[in-house]
Length: 635
Image 1 (cartoon, rainbow, N blue to C red):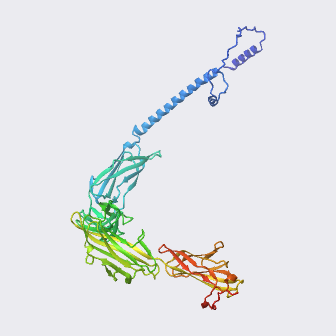
Image 2: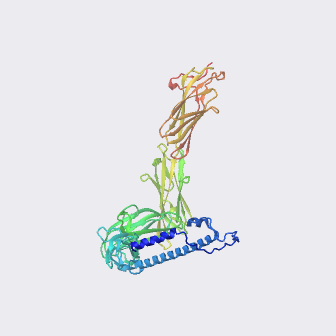
Image 3: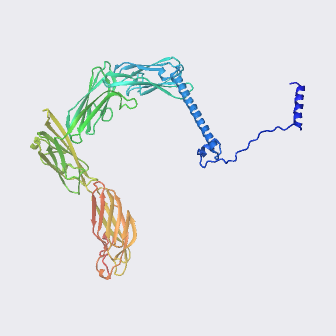
C-alpha cells in the first residue's frame, strides 16, 4: 500500500471516531426466564479427589464438569493403551528381526560339534575333534570353548596332567568363519564302561553385555578293554576270630609294558590287617607295581583277622590304576576294580580268659595276693574241632618266671609262656560239638616294683573240616591284665615345743604333731588323713609342711589334705596343739592325737587305698633325746 493510501485510511478512522451526529442503531433485546433452575441434591458423577488432584482440577466442580472430565479421562486411557500396544508390537517385531529374522544373530546359527571314536581301549590316546562355525551376519566376540572330561582322563602331553573342565579362549569368530579345535587325551576306565565328552561355548555379541551359551551333543564312547585286569579270590564265609587271606591278581591286558601301577584296598570294619605279601608301599592298604609286562600277572596276598558281629556282610574292594599326581598313595585314574564279599559267621571255637577280671579284662589284687586263672575253650559247631594248641604269653613289670604254675601245660621261661598242646593234654586232640575245655594256671605278681602289672595274652590255633570238606585253620586271641593295688601308710610323732615336760596338772604344754605318708607303690590322687583330738587337747591353728590342714571344732576332727602323692615320696605335714592335764590325768600318759586314717585313689588301678596308724601319746621318742616317762603327768 502507498503512503497516500495509508494516510487516507487513517483520516477515515479519525472521522468515525470523533463523529457525534450519527444515528443510533437499535438492537433487539430478549427477556431472561424468571423460573429458578432445579439443582440436583445428589452427585450425578461422584468426584474422585485423588484423580482431580492428579489432573490439577479443583475438588469442587459441578456435575457437567465432572462428566467432561470423565470423558477426557477415558480418552487418555484409550490413548495410553493404544501407545502401549504399539510399543509391545514394535518390541516383538524388532526382536524377531534381531534373533529370527534377517539372520542377524542367533544361537541356532552357530554350529558346534564334537567327534571322536565310539570305542577305545583304556590307557590309549583318543583324538577329539571340535568344530565351530558362525553362520550369523555378525561376528561373535569373547568366545570361550568349554570341554568337560570324565574323571581320570589325562592330557597326552609329557606331564600327563589330569583333565576335568578345560576352558580355551577363542576370542572373536567372524561371519561364516569355521574353527577346528583338535584335542588329544588319554582315557582310562574299566572295561565296557561308557563315558562322554561334553562341549559348550560361551560368547558375547557387539553392543551387548549379555553372555550367550551354546552346547553341543556330547561325544559318547565305550572303553572296549582295560590295560590291567584285577581278579580277587577268597572264601565266601569267614568266622569271627578267624585269620583269613584274600588274594588279588593284577594281570596285564596290554601289548606294551605298563609302568607305575598303583593298587589300593578299602577294608571293611570287620577286618583287622595282619600282613601282606609283597609288603605294602604305604600304610596297610597301598601297593606299587613299577612295571607290568605284557601277559604278566602280579599276586598280592592280604592276611587279616576277622572281627565284628555274626551275620554281618563284609566287603573288601580293590582299585587298580595310575597314581594321583598330587598324592601317590591314591588312584588318580582307574584301570580296573575288584571286590570280595563274605558273610561273618559264628566262630567255631570260642576262647575266653577267666581271671576274675572286670568288664575291661582287668583284675586288681592286693600286695602278696596270688591269682588262679583258666583258659576256657568251647566248640560252637556241629562238628568236631581238632588239633587245638593254646599259648598263654606273660609279660609286664610284675611278671617273674619263678611265680608261674600250670596244669598239663609246659612253661617256657625263655619265651615267658605256657603252652598246652594235644601231646600234653588229650582233651585238646578233639573237642566235640558244645564241649568245653578248661586249662588251669596260677601266678603271683611281684609287687615290689612301681606300677606292678602282669599282662596275659592267649593265642589259640585249631582246625576244622569245612562244608566243602577242606580243612580250615582258625586263629583266636584274647587278653587280660592283672594289676597290683598300691599300699600307703601313715606315720605320726610328737615333739615338745614349750611348757612343762613331763606335763603337769594345771599347766599347759605345747607340742608339734607331724604326719607323714609313706608311699612306695603307685601314684596316689586325692590323698587325705583325718584324726580326732581328745577333749584336753587344743588346736592352735599353726600348721606347716605339704598340703593344707583344717579343723572342725564341733567334732574335733583334724583333716590333712595332701593331694597327689608320687610313688617313692614321703610328704610331711605339721600342726601345733596344747595339752592341759587335769587331776584325773595324774600318773597317766595322755593321748595327743587319736588314730589316723588315710584314704587315697590309686591312679594306676583306680582302686581306693586306705591306711591306719595308732594314736600319738605325750610320751616322746627317746631316740630324739627325751628321757623315759617324759609323757607321764605329774602333780
